[in-house]
Amino acid sequence: MELTPVQLNYDFGKLFKTTKSYIDNYNKNNFELKSRINANHRATAELITRLYAKQLNKAISRGDSFEDGFPGFKTYNPSLASCKGCTVRTIINHKERLKAAGFIIKEVHHGKTGIELWINPLIFDERVKKIHPLVQEHQEQKNNNSDVNCLINVTGTLQEHHKNTEESWISNFDNAKANELEPAFLQGLVNNFWNYARSKLFPDDIFSKEEELKVLENITTTIYRNFEVKGSYKDWKDYQDGLYERVEMVKRWLDRNPYRWIPSAHLYFHPHNKRNNFKSTYQWFLKQQNLKRNIRNRILIQKAEKEWLDHDKGEGKHKDKSRLQLFRLQLKHLESYRDKTLLKVYENSLQRILSKKLTQ
Image 1 (spheres, one colour):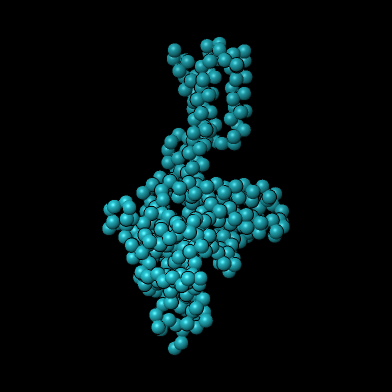
Image 2 (tube, helix red, strand yellow; image 1 turned 180 degrees about the vertical axis):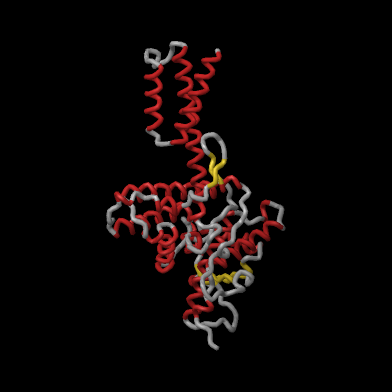
């Protein structure tokens, strides 16, 4: 039976994973720093793999079965440099390192018509019938930072987060104030998020029009739930700001270690990628937000306690106020944060202060 071109396509995500595995294994067996493949070399290898796969898939769509062997990857050094945002000399140096690692097994110069590279066949030894997610559905990976699975409240105790999901956030939109927002506004949210995420997380990646449309489709489904939940303009603006913060968190995480990586954009926002997709950053984001609130609340409580101590000494800016006036002033200020936990901790703090005063 004759196979259709779709059944023989190379999947970018699978190639990305294979490339990463090859380089990781190479580095594991090479202890000298000068001979290892660093993050910049790795990025060049991934770029070459991606562009080469595009050439192969295009040939497959024309009916080429590669019975006489794989063709080389035809390109130009200046083109690779332009794609990666570096100099031609840097590309040449990176190719030499990749040759030494066995990733590039052959290079032929064709003068004005460019160069031709042959990649290690281990990278392209399997084609797929359809695009698979990077990991299997419903498969979880234990995180060493297990506290990510819990939230820390102002008292430092751990809380379960089974109700603190991204779905619950969107579902809690104020439907009473929700109007039918313009489709252009909603699509603008998707486009603006993608442009922001692309500039921060995928600055060197090149996307065809079809690939970009697929990424936008995945983002709409995974991140925005196809806008099935109605929300007000403020609801969506607050949600969008949170998304931007999560992108920044991932960017900082990547910047701290050159060997860290995230999947390709198509897989990172894929609804079936349950392990290492962008959606999983929500719990991480909640933990960070909770830690920020924890620190903020501690500072507010410490400030309130000091005001009481100063007041008892007849010092501070509230020395002329009565204790009831001071209490009402502090309570009004703390209520403005709309944090019930903060008010509970304030109540406990005030009881300790009063109890201590009575025992003196």
